[in-house]
Image 1 (cartoon, rainbow, N blue to C red):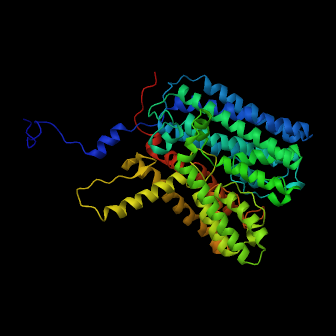
Image 2 (image 1 turned 90 degrees about the vertical axis):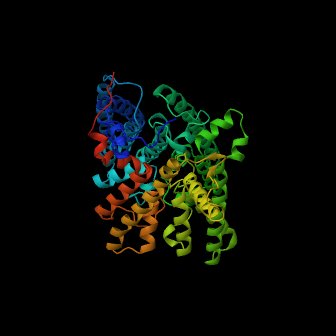
Image 3 (image 1 turned 30 degrees about the vertical axis):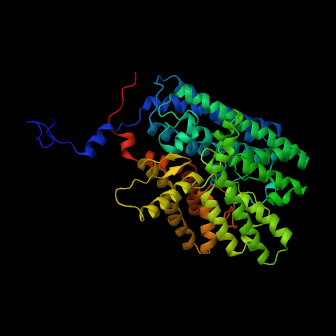
Length: 503
């Protein structure tokens, strides 16, 4: 029988858990960043051929030349990166660094071409960040007075920004924890190589494309303007919110157009892998998926609350129901389209929208916010805590989501994002208060940026101080990357330490 009291053998040393954990850490490998960074550069170069063509077709030759230079530079960098040999297996920290680079460097590269349309360099960079992160906050006060090529470019950037967010989670991220495996269902594999993740990403791309084409045709039929329908669907499917109209949803010529676009954004806030399951014939997934049910319930609840608040403020019931539903869908899906000016909302409606924007849509969708899955996990943890108060000490009680037991590590990983979300908002509001903005308007603007929503109380504009634009841009990037990627980039352990040998 084993003697549990036996002392360690002579010369053996006890190693602390912290040292054992440190021994398992590995820094990012330059070859991996170069190889897959090259793939990202090639992808961004190809995606920006459309803005180049739009500028040429519109006769904006200076803008076309700028886009051509950026496309050529990205293409050369990508070609050099693809010549680097690298293994197929990718570490989680490498994936997060690549994801952060994609969303941080792309706006920097495209700020110059956008500035050729008459924007200041800072505004062009802000517009690019807002586009790629699918936020929709804009410094352009009157979009209808801007060149159509610029408006199409913004919407196109939102479309591939939303696509990039949905697919980077699958193509780049090593699936660890509930949220990542949620994207890879039904396989649920913990270890996947790049080819298998790429196959799944192609399926997600097909679902994204189908949603875009169907949405465009539906909005075209409703509005009878193919170009306007295209711009709004590109922004709607990505839950981005850029509009080519000065009054957003209220600027449509036909009332049905706003309702059609809102339904498109609601569909986009549903997890893309859920559509894949339905395409395979598993229609019951819609009814059994807890996030889908939560999305519908919370959208209707917030829409009802907003309608009641607007009706109480003196608006007739029919108009209040219309604006309440459209605003409720916009804030919950984080799409950012609006049928009325958010600055004119009663304070109660602003607080309601703030809560809705903070929660957001489903994991695996293009929606922002902290995500419904994390809210459900938080509620399950609270429920478990309350239940344990009435159980004997030896009783086993576990938190479950859709019949699956949540591990302690998964719970900590999932709930870390809401904590960072709240902390970032609290810090970001301070500069706006120092500049004299009303607290509720400042909070609304910061939550809108961090949740990648795009609704604005009028604070965001070309006249906004540069430091505040930088704060909002950081919030947009952090919110889109869900904070963890930026923290990984800033961690010294990511860059310094031992590395796996690349064979």
